[in-house]
Length: 354
Image (cartoon, rainbow, N blue to C red; front, side):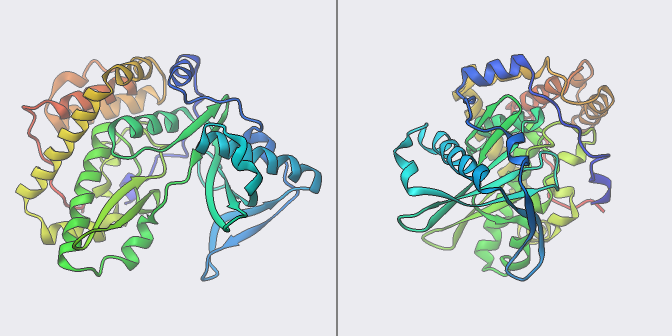
């Protein structure tokens, strides 16, 4: 939706020492054999096309023979750090099949395809510029959502595992003509996803910034929406930016919800999701407090955007607790605390913005 497009390309925010100390204490750091900038030394590239011949906005990159030997070994070691806690026994059977580079996006990621030569099975992981907003988003995803995204950081380099699923835009093109039962489950999951994003203020959840995992069940299927882009963790100032329901790209699922859900049902699912988030906060209380202590002192947005979001949430919630917020971390903590209070019953109806 036009009104929810980021005001300008987001600036990269470095991970400062207090946050890095938190990450080190919680085993998110590693000594990597190769840094992001090292991968920029490729010799050539070609556009990567999808199965229908469309440009994917990724480019497959190629290195000189001598450089590729170093890159291949380093990528296998990084994969071992990410997947097997550094156990190198798996390395003999692995090789790098392809490295792709995307200039679209803030972190300009490299995507590495690793193949197991014993059975030709492959996996992916990503090497990105370390952006503080994204890392806060990944950590909040780990603590507050039902999903875990494994990641490691070394200075200015961020490693992330691949999140499997159907991209949201592809899902809406090809997977909505389902049984009524499955359509209800899809709409229910979107309500919960909408709530998770708003509680922790994860923005820009347009259809191509999340994937949908489908799990066959006894009757029908279960659906799980998982964000894959965390660059807009509490950076923009507009409140609607943190509600996926307000992006036109998500309208097909919104209309399913309007067709199958009553306001009472929407409210029920919202309260259920808040209860689950509250339970996760309680079980990780010490770590959550440590993260918030760091985030509240960090400068991860501009004072203008922070004030705009604080004022917008104060008006939305009809609550003055946001008036004294000076950082986005304080805004995030107040929003989480408010929405998880048992006596807070406000419901956000599932409907698109006209």
